[in-house]
Image 1 (tube, helix red, strand yellow):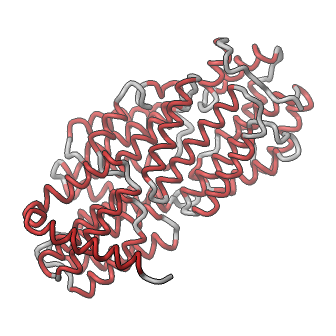
Image 2 (tube, one colour):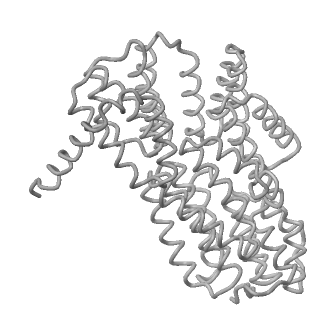
Image 3 (spheres, one colour):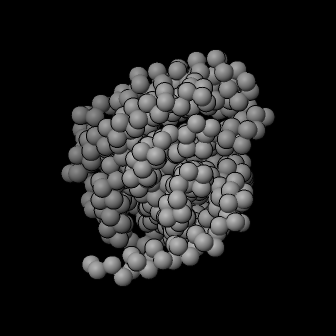
Length: 477
């Protein structure tokens, strides 16, 4: 077959509209654009039947489109079907579509690198980092088979974004920042519709880094999904408003959180075909806002409803379910009942391990570390147990926060070697965090909280740290 190609220098408005529509649910707009580009038509009912078809009928539907309207239309229809699959449905849905398209589309189709990108994201969301890396490598290989075109640029920008999200999931925030910013630059150069999605992921990375103010600013900027994103699928706009609300809640800004959640509620009410998980996050953040405003019982009831929402999804959305349970545990258990909270944390840790929810596991370990700066901290054995599990934290910003909690515990109850060890671990995080991000977090979680200790003992810690590092370097292999 002959793949669809556009010259990167072509300023034809129809091509740009197509690229703005490729990641949207604006099927009618895409159809009109392709009718102009291909000089033929595909009935809207035919596309509607494909979107509503069971997985087992997709191959026959695509084959019929190819026979009646041509191979270019079957390629178009395949990518529309691809976009209709929510990434929280798991890898099986994408595998079934791959089987349906394998005999219809050649390796030179832009459909394949986009499919691998979606599979990379779905595997990452399921906690399968190894498979996610495989799909990323395949996407890179397949995009190399495409001729230089706007669609190649769309695929390349998508792959860079997916790469950044995977780097974030593995804890390499410095590489994540580089890849996401590269995607933003590339998509901006060619006016690709993926640009606001990349800005959304940048905001998510900033939030994961503990930089809530910067994340909120990114969500509400002109380049973010809140505004420019209206050219895209409504799901991206909704996600941006929900994420902005979460940033505001974490900043204890009830006014902004209320405004963002009202907008999200309107989108949920007026828009169809939205990923089911987003409704659960709306309920969860509404509960957290209630708690922020002092309505604890109402907030906990909403968090319980969010748990039920995620659990009833098919398949259950374990990442969201754990998010809601963690929030509920943190607010439901009084600050004095540390033993009960520790028991709940360990139970949820087991659940996170069973379902591959790496981000939830990380947050739980940070919550556990906060117990060591409470009025009645756990005993030394519990501290030692947590230290041996710190490597499971896949977020360097939250690692810094957790190590900061253990560091102040060590200042109060442990000897200097333990203090020096924790300070060495803290400083090594510079390798995986952007420099400005590390400085902001170090000041927020270490210098401002523990300046009294740092001022008195920093020189001793640094001397001991250098000694530890020298011992490691001279240790025989």
